Image 1 (cartoon, rainbow, N blue to C red):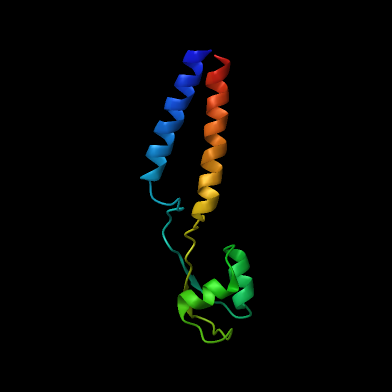
Image 2: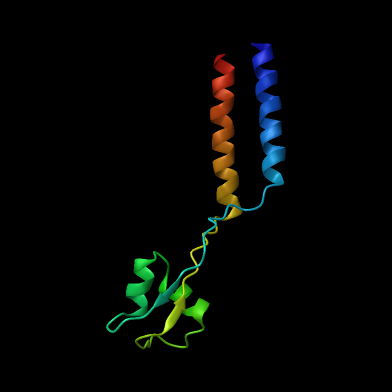
Length: 104
């Protein structure tokens, strides 16, 4: 039992140190370009790409929600996960791993 606790502590320490030096989690993908067709709105395009209308407008420098057919819009889909959430999830995963090693 004592060896299991030491192994768990060492494993937790290794995970904590390795995750400290990893960059924030980002979904890497090429940013697509959307060509507006007649009848589309900022909201409908944002919904299609699962981003906010505000993000779409800010990314493309749109002063208002007026679009015209043929207009090219850059869609940035890089997801940013706040660090507080990352640490919470890492802590949960470390606990799961420790429980596995503790049973052994």
